[in-house]
Image 1 (cartoon, rainbow, N blue to C red):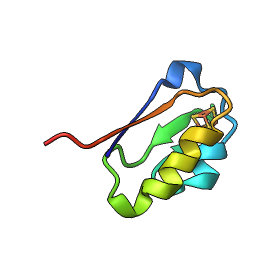
Image 2: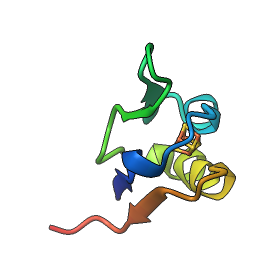
Image 3: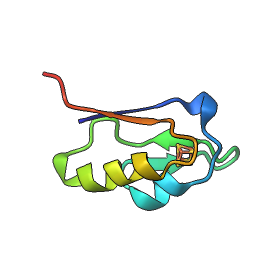
Image 4: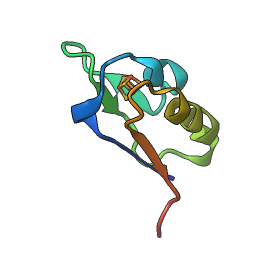
Length: 67
Ligand code: SF4
């Protein structure tokens, strides 16, 4: 899977970093999301999907992996 985030629209809630800490972090100064792993392993799918659903700004996108 592949993860993208429109950081320009992130409101810095931190929900994604709490939901999927292996995939998302936050910039310490501005609290904007930092994608730690844009191609996470399948084991992270459930947490990543929950982060997509939980993002209050709806700026996280999850795509199937392309070869
Ligand atoms: S959950 Fe959404 S709005 Fe909140 S920090 Fe993550 S990407 Fe930004």
